[in-house]
Length: 165
Length: 394
Image 1 (cartoon, chains in turn purple, red):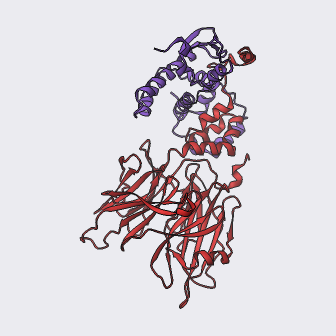
Image 2: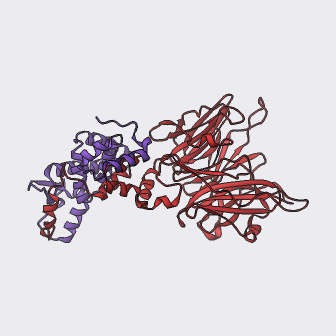
Image 3: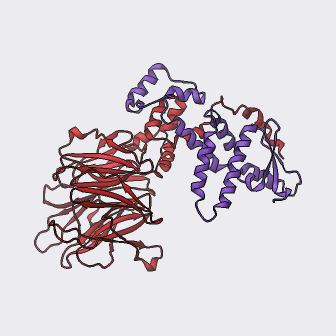
């Protein structure tokens, strides 16, 4: 068992605390650099200010499995096992939550999970219409009707095979 | 120490489901999508449109899509090649797709693939002697006719004209090279002239013959042989002409320095075919037995040797044998660094397989559905424009 020295407490924006193994938390670059800054201090609480508890929980779940799988499959096969877990991990996340998660992961600077979430969002919107994408990302259309019609006309081939469910 | 991060708290607490993501993250997400999708999303908003059109995005998108290349297959159903089609096959998704050729009706004859690099495919659409070319981005459907080459046969007849197309990172340019051999007159070596079309300047330039006389003045590249692009250089299999006769040699053209070089190839027995390959950024060769021309004749041993050129140590440039392959037919090319594509011709069917030279795994690819022949090259989905000017932010 790891001693308490190997633990760190991550505090969400609501003030909820999560006790995490250092091996897991060190995948979050921001946590790593904060801890390096205050090396020697007994206080091992890192506030993640802007990150909501539900995202902290997701990120911890991802890296906990990442670390475990890496240890278990040292000899090989780690990548396939990780892919399997990632698929199952993404299934439990609501499509709208992916955006909040990518913001949190970007803030915490966790490259592996950032890659996974960006790919998941890309897959989700790949066959979607322009209208769906505006709504999904909360983007205001700043084209005039004429401008938009012209852009669409230029690339008509890019607009077939779109589905919006 | 931790409090100094608090100032960002107010602006970022709303980083939840309803607020827009920063453009830097949007860029990362969009760069993972097919060209068709990002082209459609240009109409989402002005910032999205500007982002997608920027050369920086085009480059980021290309880096992502290069990890996932497709096979581009040109197949024909009769010996003259007139009934032909282009299909693409994605190795990861296993999706087979027919490709519409937007300039097909304006063709005199059927295009040959000169080269495919970063999503740009260069076609030779001339009757003969590689004298008319089209540059085509299949994904964006954009194409353009390349201006007419400058070297012509008004004064002396052509003997053989070879061409090659590729990309060089150092000069960040795509180049089309045309190597013209004029008919040799008695007891004279063939005379070679070379011209280069640059994507960034949009024009041809004839290379000073004094530099080409010294390097490739005594060799000839067979017309129709596809050049292979390895690390910014084009490679062809050439033959040293003149008294020595029949010596096969590798001819290379550095698209950065625009210089030619000759490299001898390993010794091999007569009757062996040589195919140049790009093995993970290194020049490599496949040596394999030629197929009998007459049907019914015994087939030679189906064995392909792969050799790689080691040139890291200046004093010790040499060819080294990497592996032997048996039973998959003849080599066509390499995809994704180490996947060797093999083509096997049986009585009325051509079968393709991919053989990973590192992991030793074999995959069957869909038959190219051709009774006669098929040409294959690698293709990536990309936004690279056929004209460099269009690459700028309008």
